[in-house]
Structures are given as structure tokens and as C-alpha cells.
Image (cartoon, rainbow, N blue to C red; front, top):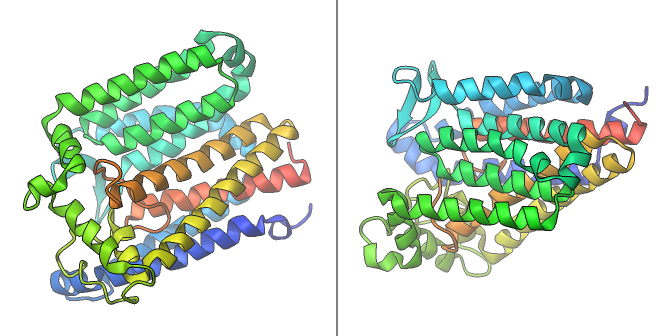
Length: 372
């Protein structure tokens, strides 16, 4: 059998490596002062990020060597496992609560955010469903609604944590993937409209979500309260200009911008590397998403339906979450607790994203060698 390394998609690999390296640099820069003050170790967050990256690379190496048909068969069991995890994280004593949200399962000095794994598992299941019921999806509303029932159950559990951001990402990716699978337009528009209405209802009926929405529209009315974080992010963008203030020279990371190394890492990047840095990041993610979707389309042409729709859904996931994170940082969208894929500090997200890239590499390999 030909070498897997020889068949790697070089643009997929290069864009991923570039994003990872840039992410490690920015996490170090954005967190160094906070880490020194809080943990008396300037590289505390960098070392932890490297631990999760190492774990992700190890798990990813196993994924690359495993035939995709194994994951296709395993996906229903993984889906059940994901549902159990979503329940466990809500049980006091088992779930770890941070900032009022029960999203983590803790072990030792580390915690794992369940929603990150749930996103991946749901897409593994969705690709399998499409492969088994492609004709039904294209011809009947039942074929479209069935996976949405699972989505609704998972969304309900995610909202109990609460994790509105993860719910939006997984729902958006699901609808986009089913649209690509050939759902009739009238069915898609009707269900997508209901989903948007449901999310809007959830946003305006929940006090903290409504506050986030109104703050996003005019943060200056709450500049010392709920609008403080967004204002500091916008100041970072303004200070960056075209060329930025230089790597390591951000002022906003000096305890002005909360979560500077996690959800708002992009704002620090905009301040330090300016418009040029922003464009570089956008191009790298555009290349990554394009290659993922391209790999998926090629797999479908080879009649590897499961592989193809999984690759496209993973690419859509990366693209959607990236756009939301950048939109939040730039004040274009309401604040949500979402990381910038492969870049922001967050072990759970980084580990799972390493698995995502490994799946894309395996799918690319199988479609090139004609593996079934």
C-alpha cells in the first residue's frame, strides 16, 4: 500500500501547521502577563496548550491509520456515548462548573469541555445517516427531519449547561451539511426558518442572552458592565491599525481585555499584528476550509459518501466557528463562548480539532488510493 505521507494534502497540512504555530505564539503573547501574575509561571498556559496538542497529535496518528468504515460503524455507539456525557456534565459533583456554566468534566488538574467532543461525534453520526438515507433526504421531509430530532435533543442538553454558542455551531453545521446532501429547498427553508425563530426566542427570553444581544448592539451604554469586554476588544482592533503594535506589545492583554488568550485571542492578534495579521489568518482558514470541502467533493465522486459528507461537514464546522469567533471579536455578533479553532487557548478544543484534521487527512488518503 502506498505511503500515507506521500498522499497528504500539502495545502491542508501547511495551513494547519501555520495556524497552530501562529496560535501558540499568540497564546503565549496574550497570556504571559496573566500567567505570571496568577501562577508565577510566564509560560503556564503555553505548557498546558502543548500538553493538549501532544495528546491531539497522538490520538490523531491513530485516526490517520484507521479505516473510515470503522468510524462509520461505530458512530451510533459514539452518539449514545455523547448523549450520556451531556447528561453527566449536568450532574452536580460530576460536572465541573466554571463561570456559572456546567460544561466540563474534570480529572486531576485538567478539565474537558464535553460540547467540543459532542460536535465531532454528531457530525460522525450525521455523515453516516446521509450515507444510509441519501435518497430519503432528497425526496421526503421525513429523511430531513430524523437527524434534526437528534439535533434537538442534543441542543436541549447543551442549552441546559448553558452553551448557546456550541448549540448555534452544531445546528448551523447540521443544516448546511443536509443542504449540501440535497434536501428540497422548501423543506430546508421551512425548517431553517423554524430553527432561526427558536434561537431568536431563546435569545430574547433568557435575561443573560438578551443582555448580551443588547450589549452587542450598543456596548457603550454598558461600558463598565456587560459591554466592557467588547469595548476593550474594539480598542485592540483600533490600536492595531494596518501593521500592528508588534508581537508582544499589546496593551489590552494587560488585564484590560478579559479572556484575552481564549475567546478574544483574535483581538490581541489584531492589536499586535494589525490588518496584515488579520488577513493572514483569514487566508489560512480559507485555505483550510476550502481544502476540507474539496477533499469531501472528491470523495463523493469516488462514491465514498460517508467520507465525503464527513469531510465537508468538518470543513463547514471550522469555517462557521471561525466566522462566529472573529465576528464576536470585531463586534459584528453577540458575545458567545467559542474559541478560534486551532488557535485559542483551550485544551478540549485543540485536542478535538487535531482529531478533525486527522479525519480530513485519512479521508484524503482513502479517496486518493481508492480505499473502501
